[in-house]
Image 1 (tube, rainbow, N blue to C red):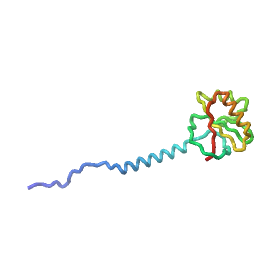
Image 2 (image 1 turned 135 degrees about the vertical axis):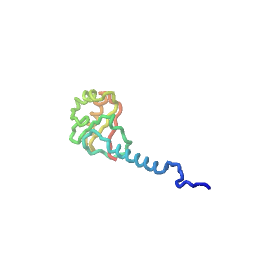
Image 3 (image 1 turned 60 degrees about the vertical axis):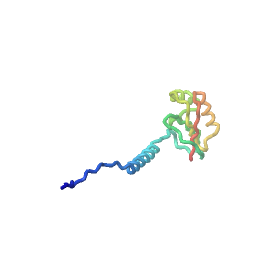
Image 4 (image 1 turned 120 degrees about the vertical axis):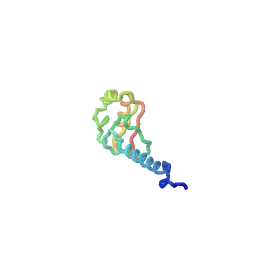
Length: 131
């Protein structure tokens, strides 16, 4: 007579579908969290509307021009004459600047600030726009 075991041995299985669901959930969570971590070191200005690709904010300096004619370098007020020396001190090997100019800012002042930044060694200018 054969004895039947009361408890049959079953091998464990790894279910892959729930694991994929969890991985997609984690991916989505980290993507949303990283988008909320971006910060632009500029003053609140009314940007012109346009379409632009996202940029890497951590490696860029922000040059803000307000509608009253104020010039700021990463929230620090500077004059047009002192802009090249301030930029040379803060560039640290970087060669691009994000220009965040108000919609009503004088065009000539924005151009003069960009020319002074070019004389300080800035090669690339990125224009900030509102989507």
